[in-house]
Image (cartoon, rainbow, N blue to C red; front, side, top):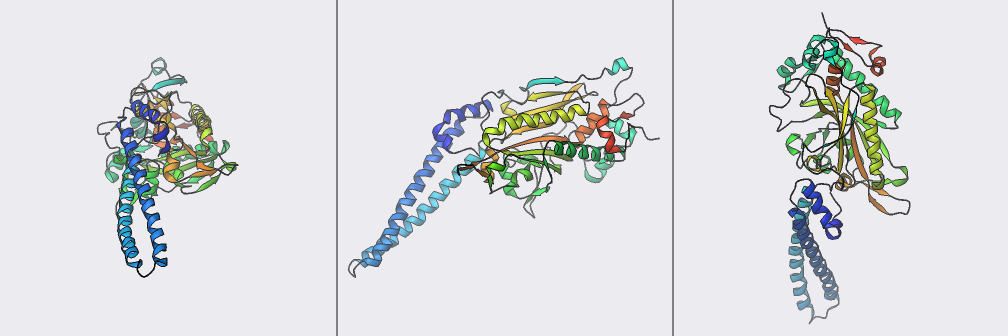
Length: 425
């Protein structure tokens, strides 16, 4: 949620942000009108209620002759106040519903456009020349079967399409990646968190996942709980309705949780393998900071992601996402795309978003500064390791002609010193 004052002080900025996202700026005009209606309704209600209180006092002091007229006026005002209160609540509710539709204003220098209008900021590492090495790279499905690491057929048997089992070395790889990711986050000063996979509607709504992303969310109606698509939800709601001590900020959390996504709208996309699935585990970084520090914190999150991917010896690109491809909450987002040899293209493996004050306002999270003033904090998130996609990167980029996979040096301590994963007999 944005600061409502912006509707009255900087509406042109909001209109421009809508246009950059490819959305209609008409929403801003409708919001301005709704804000005026809301404030007018509240003002009228408060004036009549104040008069009602005055008349109540006058009734107590009125003479016997005056009392009937005063009582009649009090009764009439009570009815009017009841109607005005209902009207005020309705106007407030309409305004809040419209505000919930408004996305976070993007930074002015975010690339305009849609999904294909990203900007490649840098390319790190060089894809292997498998032709020069004399063999054609296998894809992760074939490698996973040869190594006894991934069982997609039984995943579908047990749970349906887009589910899988990680078996043997595949399971060990995920556990190694988890331990390594948490170890790196501790090295960078993050506090580890194990995050609930089920959350209340207020947490999901507060983080912006019940708007345009609602179709991708699993809901349990009997309990009115949601399965999270990212531990960002729990980490963001962790301090909901709290006032944080500004002197103790920033807070750096790293969460681990299972993640669940319906992948609505992805019919026919990435049906082979474990790139686009309904369940996966993920290590996620999350930051609370003063709004003026958010851009610097965002740069740090991106730097951590880059360091992690580089350490696994995976070629990748850093992309800045265009405004029209940002989620509801993000004002800026960077993605890292890893090289997939079997597809000869880069695919998304991490992302990091600066959500400025947007989520904090929706979740009621504020900070108290040294001068005693209280205002919203900024929140940021960044994927450190989404397990299936990182396993794809490791299998395909580090494969050998015989189907074995070389384990990157940084993961070997978490795999008992194992240097190579060999095919099963």
